[in-house]
Image 1: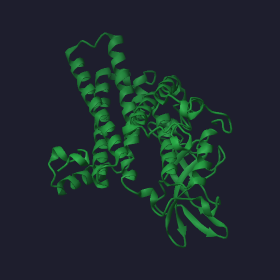
Image 2: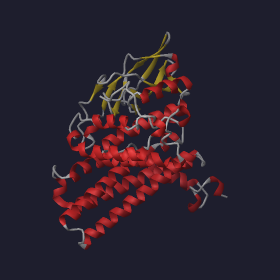
Image 3: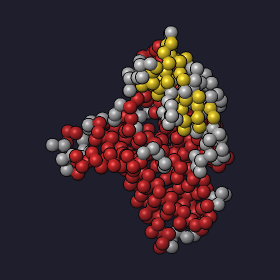
Image 4: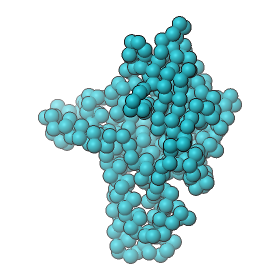
Length: 387
């Protein structure tokens, strides 16, 4: 389990991008050993802690490094991409950690921020768990002195390892949705038995039963329905797209190294495939970086920002599928053998590309644009530049 209650580097001094490159290099060297049912990049999460990356998203005005507060969230975009290139499982876990801390910073009161940011500095791993069984959701049952949780979450990444999950729950009897951050002991309340996935096996994704956990009156984070407030809810998809981009780059690097090692790179058909892969990858990068900037600047109407992020995640998914197809065709049967690095990288990427509601993301963006009268070239320009 990640170390907690241990001193960590001073967050303000962290070179987050440099730290991410170090973390990614070591994560890549360990990824194959973690690729099994029930696997988890435990040593890599501990490495993130010692490098100061678990505390890095704490805002500057809370004595943190403010990762994600830089103009356009450019450093955070690079950090998520780089970590994803080393291990998509680790990238998924870290993206959830960042998401949770950003929600605390945005919606928490002063005492909540102080307490939870102190937990992050001590090495607690945060996450966001919002997926629920179709038949029932997590409830906040009102009781004297606060609330008690009833129910759980599914598809919770880092289950058994995340000790400070941010979850959504609805109050009983008033039926109002709130966020709470639960206090969990490592290795408890998690069931990974159903996670028998094609890829991302090291993400420790499973069911979590939170029944019986007490939540004090001051444990509710933000106002009702703050979690789903736009553009941050749908707009936050740029973060997982950045991690996916890292996975695409890893596949491209493995593919390129294979062509070099085998001496097949100068074959015109191989060169053409590699060129197509480079175009797809760079296109995805441009979409992700622009999406991060639009969400950070928050200058456009929320619906317009959300539409752009929907298109960005669609573009990254398409780029990932293109690069996978080209790389597998180029490498051939060797890329499907378990001792070839492309095999695991391809499985992880193909699995992580499967994000919720891709058709909704694409069609809702198209509907938004259809109803707009601004010219296509001005749709996502800075608000001050649009007539």
